[in-house]
Image (tube, rainbow, N blue to C red):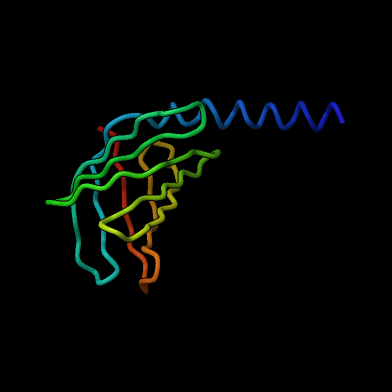
Length: 117
């Protein structure tokens, strides 16, 4: 039982410190489900030991979401207008993130890269 508690605590602490490691500003390059492309900027700020806030500005659009890192995965849920979206990124060795996103109730997925600035 103590081993399970120790393992759970170590996983929690590893995830907690990891969110802070992705804080910063990023250039955004993406492709919408229809194939059109977009560019912009994103900023990630830690708001607790395990969660962060991410804000994207692409063109005239700004959206904000909650995010979390786990190992080399980074996930964000956001609201765009009145729609809920979800992104799942893979954190690359160079600190960039390659992801796929979708919006609830819509067909297709988009792709996005976050490049550290």
